[in-house]
Image (cartoon, rainbow, N blue to C red; front, side, top):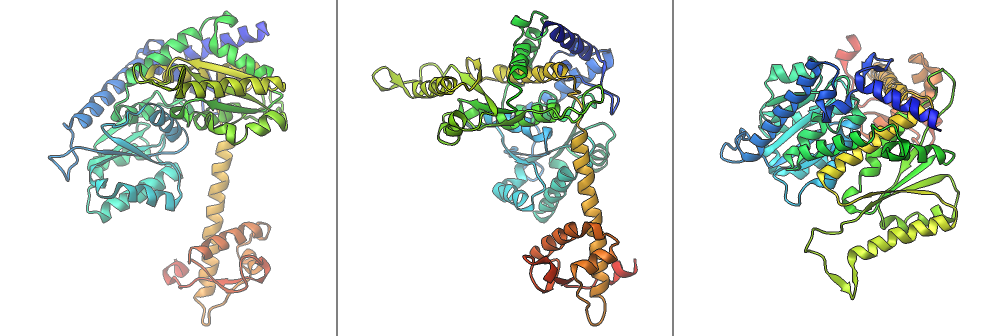
Length: 504
């Protein structure tokens, strides 16, 4: 494997120097510069990184200290953060919040990370009267991501209904001159911070995307950056045995016939680590073609929860069932802060039980020829979390080089977004057809076949059925005959004729 690893090390060196790593978009990939700006290929980028960090530290300190106050409570302080984003704009900040936020943070954080109306309503309702003292961070590189845009519109509606001025509590993290950036500038939002086009969403935790929410919760973000920097230094050695990320990538390569990577952190605070790794690993490694254009269908499937909870969930199958996986145990040596531990029985603490569960499970799997990797950290701190992020970011890059794929583009994600747009376009055509039928006197209920024919989309009849079923469940369409359980029996119309839509 040595020649492959030396090639991977060379590729990582070129990446850090600013080579174009995402040819689909002509982009560099520079998340390593975020924790060591001196590595940036030019002084302009270095200053961008340094100035952004300085600005977000000042802003977060001013918010936490009460120097920046909510407009409706000039004597009070901001008490909550509502973060609106999806994918890499949410998973990293969620993981870090769960892992590192103090028990009583200066600002508590909530997330809107989907376009589920009930989920959005729940988060806003949970804020209650504290909406007036909530800082809203909207995170989107372009500002056009539908889920984030929808979340923003829903939050703005809640502010209007509460008689609050959203702009004075809104913060944008976005690319300069994007739709979101222009909106925030024109409307006079409280603050704007940049997203760099050379930082991908899944590697953005140590940019403003992750650092600002963490700082507002009282998390030491400089220590996170130090942890990432120290891990990067360790991972630059070309001596394979001394390179943690290369060893991890080698383990993946060895075990890659087992395509499921089960991540089991034995620490409650690391509960969301596997969710964070799902995007980092699967979006980076899950590729149809290699760099030579050959169809390879690469991928590693990541799932997991935490130990010892999972021993009561799916360890039975891992030990005795289908052998299509390898396990990664995340071991944390320190159970509690020094001086706080006590013995449940002579010589045994609560943490000893957790330690015993980890080692026992590891041995039980090994005894049945199930392979595992163990990553050990002394304790969960900002520095160790920064190091874990750095370890896996580099391991992904090295592994991608070993299997000859591009870790830094995501054509499948774009395909999914395009398909979603096509569904919404078809829905508009369905609504137009139903509206025309509903404006007749008498109203003309239509079968699915008639709707599909008038939409000139007979090949999409199943999707039309799904659209109508969804609209009917939300009282936006009326089933005149039949029911959605028997699609061919359905006759449907709209409950109200929209004359303006009919005549354009």
